[in-house]
Amino acid sequence: MTEFIRKKLNESKAARWTVLITVAFTMFCAYFLNDVMAPLMEKLGEEFGWTAQDFGTFNFSYGWINVFLFMLIFGGMILDKIGVRMTGIGSCICMVIGAAIQYYSVGNFVTFEGAVFGIKMQLFVACVGFAIFAFGLEMAGITVTKTIVRWFKGYEIALAMGLQVAIARLGMGLAYALTLPLANRLGLSTPILVGLLALCIGLIAYLAFCVMDKKLDKSVGAVEVSEEDKFKFSDILFIIKNKGFWLITFLCLLFYSAVFPFMKYAVSFMKNKYHIDDDFAGIIPFMLPVGAIFLTPFFGGIYDKKGKGATIMIVGAVLLICVHFLFSLPMLDHWLIAGTLMVVLGIAFSLVPSAMWPSVPKIIPENKLGTAYGLIFWVQNIGLSGVPYLIGWVLYKYCITGTNTVTEIVDGLEKTKEVTLYDYTIPMIIFAGFGVASLIIAFLLKREDRLKGYGLEKPNVVKE
Image 1: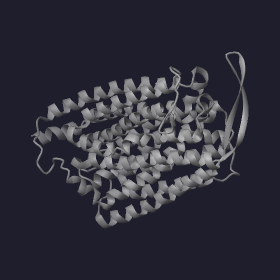
Image 2: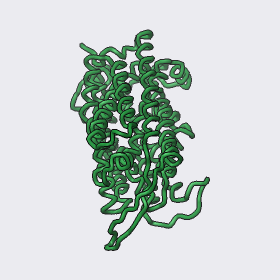
Image 3: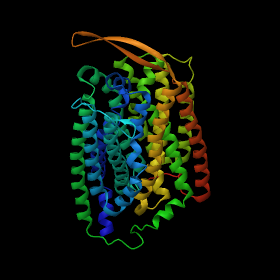
Image 4: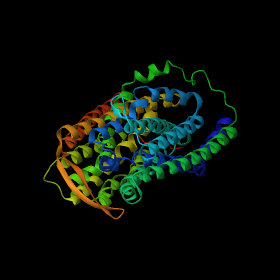
């Protein structure tokens, strides 16, 4: 009887989609804050003297807690132990605390002096805030992913994951579109304050989800978990011995290393190569997540009904390579070309996640998913933190082409500033290289699926 009630609740579309919208809104707020600093590289240099390498160091701090303290791995285990409600609330609180520290660091509240481990004090404080926020964000990502599996498995799981990703990407896109205009008119720290306030609302939304999730448990009643279904530390061995798991993990690492780190520098790239001014430099990067809003759920729906998950990932990797290769060509410097390539990158960015994340439950049992996603996110964070640092170092060491003197009116007074100019050819070649590696992994994953029968090429929706 208990299983019957659980099934009926899972069949309630109203309940499923209300849960999805609620947790997706939380991730929308989180992703706005995550990318709000990305368009500010030049302004941070003008106001605080940050170099491209300093900006790379700031982005590298994304992995201080997640990667070097192995907290995502432990976090995944904790998620499997205590569930999505407590883990999600803790994640949201971490994001709010980290965002508050980040805002304090660039809000001109105090004058920072000295250095820590060779990092300027003001930059170090910003890094600490971003590291705490990043831990909360990645844990929230794992938790929300497992939440969707819990509510949608056997139904529209890829569509649901695609919609969640799409809504989160909208927050990311708004950060690129709005940050520079807000910073230019209301001060550099204003966009960060907006993101902090949004995160507080996102925390309230997650608390609302927790009420719904608790009611679900009560309606199902107490169901004793068998010894086989309980998480054990030996389950880690089951996961790390699985070749399919590692292929998806490395595909995630390589593909995202060619997208998210690129987006951290996308506004500067548009200004340097395509000569787009501040008010519009974020519009072209904004096109990527906007496209994902429609395309990720669309491709997820195809995967749900038709299958072909591994093939979808291969197509996405091919498009990724083409875009970064064309971005690297110096002669293609018209803004219309940039816009077109960003649209194609948005298609690639929609294809791979729409198939990759729903494929994990086909390889790993549900009671081990938190740990599995934690391991994937931990490896992914190596790229999300290390690659931006690499790109910042490359820009600082090899890609400075000169400076440009800009005059602007501040408080009625004329102010002159020097803006560093960069050549992004080498970074784009690096990103294309990550795309090539991800394509190889995608082919290997399709081969492994054929050998092991994971069902990556089969539909997700279970027909009655």
